[in-house]
Image 1: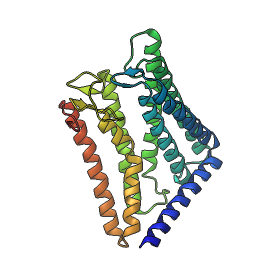
Image 2 (image 1 turned 45 degrees about the vertical axis):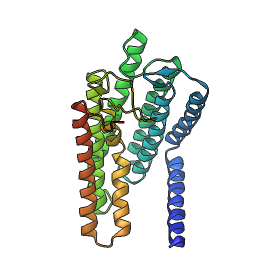
Image 3 (image 1 turned 120 degrees about the vertical axis):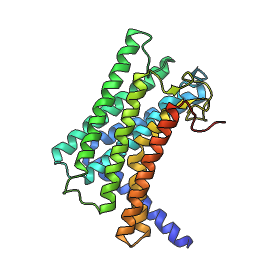
Image 4 (image 1 turned 45 degrees about the horizontal axis):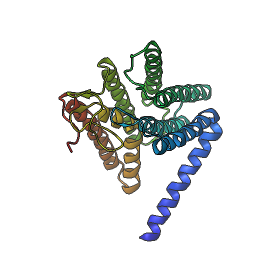
Length: 277
C-alpha cells in the first residue's frame, strides 16, 4: 500500500513537471510571466515580515500575496488547457500572451497600490486611484472574454476528452463566468462585504468577513472551479472502471460545486458570514 501511494505521488509529480516543461516550451512568454509572479510573491512575503503597515485590518502585503498565488495557478491552468484545447496554433499563442499580460497588469497594480499603503479595489479617492481601478476593471473584463472563449470551445466536437471530463470542463468554465459576474456585483457596490463595512474581523490570511456577508467567498471558489472540478473528474476516472458511473459522479460533483458557489453567494447577499468565529 505504501509503495502504491509513493508510486502515485511520483507519477503525479512527474506529470506536473512534464506539463510545466511543455508550457514553458510552447508558451514561453506566459511561462516568463509566471516566473515574474514568483519574484513578486517573494517581495510580498518579505513585505509581510518586515512591513507592519495595515490596511482594512490586515497587513498591506497579504492582499497582493493572495492575488499573486491565485494568478500563478490560473496562468498555469490556462497554459495546460491551451496545450489540449482544439484552438489553432496562432490562436493559442494569442490567448497565452494576452492572458499573461492581463494577469500581470492586474497583479502589478494590486502590488503597487499595496506598496503605497492604499486599496487597489473600489478605490476612487483620487484621480490616479480611480484610473488604475478602471484599468483593473478593463483587464478583468478582457480576461473574462478569454474564459468565455474557452467555455464555447468546450462544446467543440474536436475536444479530445472522455465524456465526464468534457462536462466537467463546461461546468467549470461556467462557474468561472458566474464568479466574474459576482465580481461585477462587488464593483457595482464598490465593496465586497454585505451588512458590514469592508475590513474588520475576518478569517486568518483570507480575511473573509466573520461578521457579515462576504462576496469574495463565492468569487474565489468560482474562479478556482476550473482546477477543482476537472481534478475531481480525473480522480473518479482513475478510481473507477465504469465510464457511466464516472460521468454521473463527475457531473454530480460539478453541479454540487456550482450549487455551493450559488449558496455562498446567496448567503453573502443576506449579510451572513461563511463562518462566524
